[in-house]
Length: 249
Image (tube, rainbow, N blue to C red):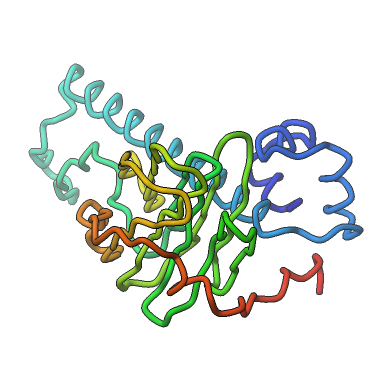
């Protein structure tokens, strides 16, 4: 946590405010007196992603200004001076580098409460919550589900390529709204979807997502089906992952 804060050049008060934490709690984490929960870890990763995106924008703007200045002062002449050993080189592009797998990736989903979400991977592992029983599932590595304000939030850090199913579970009869955001860590804006529909309490709606980092824009949620019961995904007891270790362990 301290390294991330120093990298962002933020004070404890600024950093704590950015990740939704009290300053004294952050100080305890940095001294190793309090563990880092998964939601805090993902919030820090997302903050680092956004900082990297801003850096790409700044680099792109600087390159554009440099190229414009060279053009205005005649610096685009690439002829080799007489008697010189210098060789002409291609003028660099002002476009920031494209994102690649080396950048952190974060998928974020949200749902209006009291509805909830459960994410299912190709191996049948789950993360999310059953709004009827209150049972929480945390079986997929790199994921977390929590509720804040008027929404349930599900985060997936660095998801592997594959097919996923996102279930909307009805906590009440009425309209649900799901927001999906995929951020590949590069300079481009995140891919965002907002989906609404009607649901009955105790029922579910399923969406599939064929996730591929190499083709993020096409990795969108697609309506699969509606069902009258959530039993098929919530009946088995959760095999939850252990909590994240304390710093330094």
